[in-house]
Image 1 (cartoon, each protein chain N blue to C red):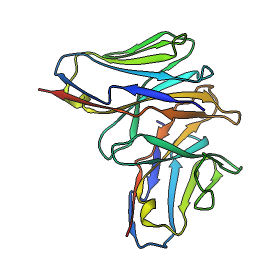
Image 2 (image 1 turned 90 degrees about the vertical axis):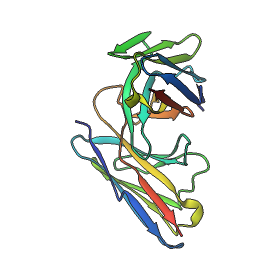
Image 3 (image 1 turned 180 degrees about the vertical axis):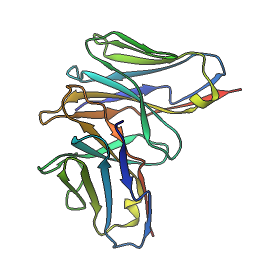
Image 4 (image 1 turned 120 degrees about the horizontal axis):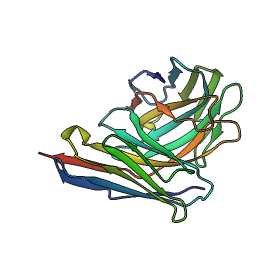
Length: 117
Length: 115
């Protein structure tokens, strides 16, 4: 149980392109979804927290107009990197936690490796 | 905000030996402490977690201890095997008002189990 699917797994595109990444919880309803960015051999840095039906909460230093997050349903959240540039190249990972129990573990997707040329 | 420190950054052990990874956190309101294992290019996978009302938890070869007073927690892996080689992340968390737990991750420990 607790499977999170993330697509695409890899994107290579030209500078200026907008890229959309999808995160789906397949067998549970995700009240909260999280988006992380991870640089090579580094830790996971939280970018934003999204709750279904409400605006995302962005961490300090993360541009909300650059990284658009939509959490339209209890099973889907999307991250759109708008007008991507080479410095946006990174490994982006989503996670989801369910509802009900107080302590909800986060379950991660497989990640998306974004390369901007 | 929360700050989590993790040591060591790299750890090399012989197969069969034990491995210990230590983390400290700064926010006394944190109440949930998961550990994740991440293999190269793959997703972090939850291996064990502990809540703030528990001092120790064990699952086969893996155990976690928590000292709330000192604000530190540790991961113990016994009888290590080559497949335990990976990066391990600790995290500290507190419940969000709207639900879910916001995780702050440590910097990671690269564990290498040598034959």
